[in-house]
Amino acid sequence: MRCGILLAAAVLAIGCKARTKSNPKGSAEPQTVLAQVDDRTITEADLKDLLARYANQPFVLARYSSIEKKKELLDSLIRYHVLAIEARKRGYERDPEVQRVAKDKMVRLFTQQEIDDKVNVSDVSEAEVRRFYEDHAAEYVRPETVRVSQILIKDRAKAQRALVAAKTLPRTDLKAFRDLVARESEDADSKQRGGDLTQFDRATTQHPPAVVAAAFALKEIGALSDLVATDKGYAILKLTERRPAVSRTFEEVRPEIRKRLLEHLRATMKKKLLEEARKSVKVEIFEDQLAKLDLATGLARPDPSRSPAQRPSLDAGAVVGNQP
Image (cartoon, rainbow, N blue to C red):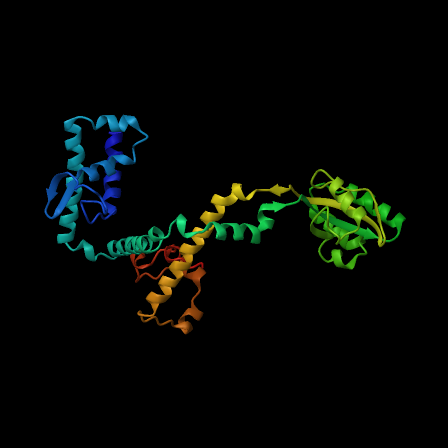
């Protein structure tokens, strides 16, 4: 029973593939025809497509080794095509939902065959991959960095009192520490950021060497330093983030970069295709109506005169590649 349900769903999926030829494009030999339903042939490939999705479920495949089960499988496809023919006769091809699904499939097939299938790995040269790696070196090779927030006070005694106050705060309560910064810190630049000194590595020259050394000495997020003497006063540091060093060689990331460049190339070609196609299509935008549109309200109260089938799916942009 369970196999029957699974295969019924698979038949629908196979039918939705809209195979227009019984012989796959580029096939060296004609496919064996198993049945004819009006002008539609059902081939060996159709049955194998139906079972291919269960290749990792031997118990399903084993059930369809006998002639009786093969007939049952073939009959499921025949029933599907008979129903499709009858639905067409009754005008269901004109149903808005059917047309929407067909349009979505057509657009996806169009962009796949005209763009995706025509762009392959060999279209991205080794020189391009190498150049990308060098131009984005910071993504693949970078030193260990830390991020700390500070309270900076000129007077040592006052700084010592602020340190005692900081130690009473919960280690993970960054808001409480920022509030203490706002009350006590005398460094105008970092004070306006809640004491944040942003990410830096050991080689930075943006902060005093003593501050850098003390920051990297902090091991756990939320840990506090003792007073750090600088030429501007005494600093109290709180570790807020630590990023480990990254060192990925060109050989390690070559496949990743090639894939990234390939996707970018396809997106660029999709954008160009869309721009060319749009030249022959009249597009008129009514900005006055667009300005009045409240999308949030529209979601709560959809237009009752327009069925869901008439609304394009949100992934239409992804189909044609909005991003260059």
